[in-house]
Image (cartoon, rainbow, N blue to C red; front, side):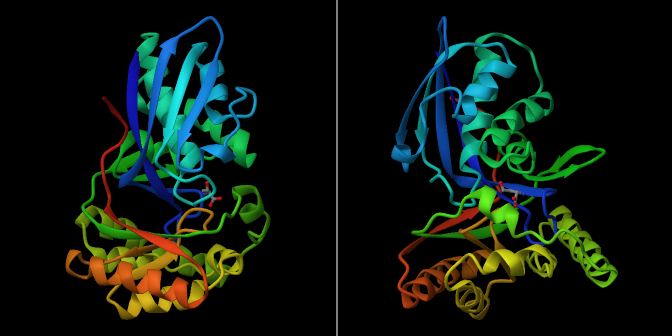
Length: 291
Ligand code: HSE
């Protein structure tokens, strides 16, 4: 039996739609695998009742197929589904690493990224890698058309998760199909600032680079109270705020000394809108680990 802890992730970071991602130090899924004739899946933990155990419909079924590695797979969910915190990616990444090691397939973590992304396609319709890459590699990752690269960074974060669900499929439908040149120039500038901030572990630069005028405004409409929660976080000291992945979680970047008050301000602002929420006081962390 092999068990793997695979971390939650936050994709996009505002200016890096479908490109940027970070591994969060917590929460995480734990995926345990044992060899079997046929793949079977058992799911426990946060939101388990919403996750299909049929291998045809579960992300890890696609991963087991891609690796030709049938197994009994137990997923203990620490990352709530439909949260914007890479829930399906954590399970897919955990299963990819665990099954690879169980069957001695010898793939590197980089080679496992497209395999885990096959699982992502099951839930969102697109095999994007911006959540599975950080869950496997850790740190800050750039999933570019010319390859995937990662760098370690030390950045305090708050991921505030309201008690509502937003499906990735729905959130992708509202993304604009075209951008004007002004938005393009602004986005490239912000994304470059953010990348520099990650390389320097500078929360000010990362926060400045998290602003996006293309995808985030469209998706914010799907999250009750987004503007109030963002403003409350900024007032409490956040250096930048954006939608985490496809939402509804909202990600704030901050200094360590402000993290607790940013978390409290975000939860309070959601409550004022009549929405229960919890805040993870987290940071950029390592990728999946074999337990
Ligand atoms: N980049 C993806 C999106 C991440 O924003 O739709 C969500 O899984």
